[in-house]
Length: 110
Image (cartoon, rainbow, N blue to C red; front, side, top):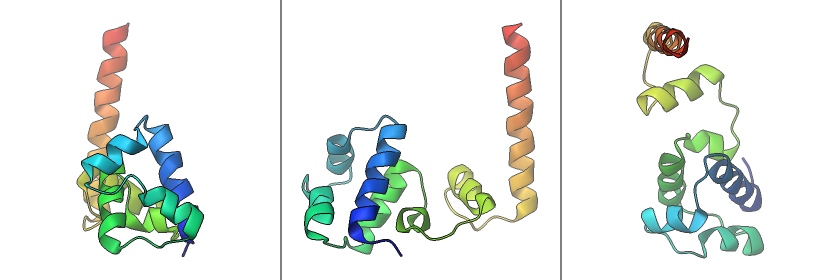
């Protein structure tokens, strides 16, 4: 498990990659603007509810934020379906649909 400082840095990194403003995210999640600074400077570990709100907002799993080793299939299931309670066959079907959509878009651009 990561320490609070590492979790705060991971949150900031993901937010930056997704072009999400930290202040907006914290406000939308109804969290204090000091949430991440408390994690970084004082090593305050956030509640599970806080981690869950932030993970949901960023579109990642709580396991990912906590630094647990999560398989790529688990990450994709969470990203596509919002949870990992999906069998691998259903995931593959969803990926096939996404691949077909990408091919159609590529053909339209020609």
